[in-house]
Image (cartoon, rainbow, N blue to C red; front, side, top):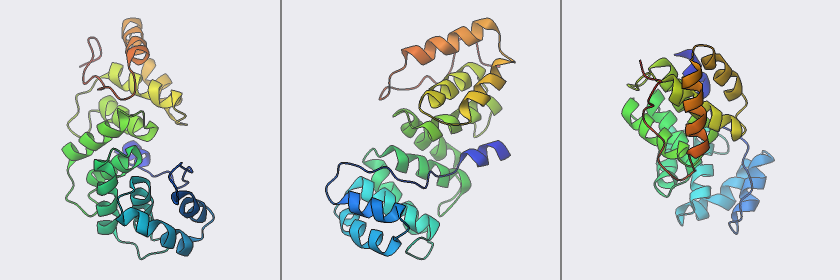
Length: 202
C-alpha cells in the first residue's frame, strides 16, 4: 500500500545525545562530513554504543561515507535494536517490511514497529496505525486503535498523523472516538500498546 510505503521512511537528521564521544560523530554527520563521522562513531559502535550503532547503520543504509550496504545497515541496526534503541527498532521493522537485506517478513516488521511504538516512537506509531486502519501485514482492521496510535504520534510531533486521525474520525461513531481518546489518555510510554479495542474492530 502506497501510504504505508510513504510512512516507512527514515528521519535523516540526528539529535545529539549525552553519550561521551558520540556528539562529535553526530555533529559531523549532520554537517555532511561523513568521513569524520565514520572515524568518530565506528569505534563506539564496535564497543556496543547503541546510538553509534544506529548512526553507522544509517550511513550504510544511505551510502553516506561508506558504500551502500543493506546487510551492514541491518546488522548494525539489529545490534542497537536489541539494546532497546527505538530508532533502530523502527528501521529494522521497515527493513523487514520492505525486504531490504532480509526476507520480507510482515510479522517481524510488526514486532519491531510495536517495540519502537511502545517507547513512543512517532514514525513507528504512525506505521502501526496505518496497518490497523487498512488491515495490512496481517493486522486486524481496528479504527479505534488506528485513531489512538495517530493521536499518540501527533502528540509526539509526527506531521501527518493529525490529518490521518481526522480522516479516520469521519468514519467512526462518537463511541469509537471516545474509546480511542480514553485509550490515548491512559497509555504510558514503556507499557504495552493495546492490540484490539472494544468498539473499533470489523
